[in-house]
Amino acid sequence: IHGARPSLHLQHIQHCRIYVSEPTLGPVHVTDCRSSKIRCSAYQLRVHDSNDVTFGVWVRSGPIIEDCKGMVFEGNYYADDGKNEGSGKSEESGVVG
Image (cartoon, rainbow, N blue to C red; front, side, top):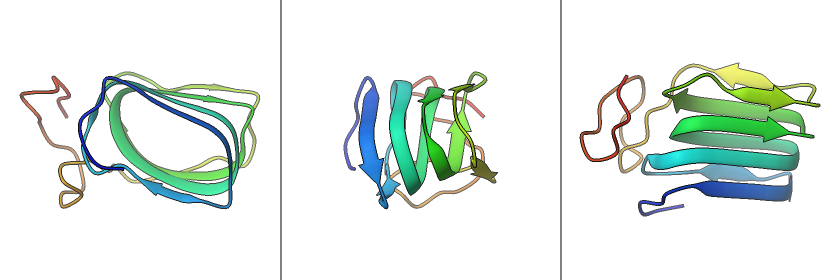
């Protein structure tokens, strides 16, 4: 997924790889996701009713995880045109690591 966005909602996803190349300015909502991999950076991560999802994420505030199992969190992923990994800084988004 390319381009800036105020928020991102991922629902009813199965067996997918989702890579977000630029920071999401607000929250990323993940609901009913199964056996997938998600890489993104955002202000907040909210995950509900999901199973067996691997995340490569960087979030400014703590994640909210409800009714999930099998969640795996790999190291930090800071999206900036998909080229940089680890913590970083984006003046425009206000996301700071």
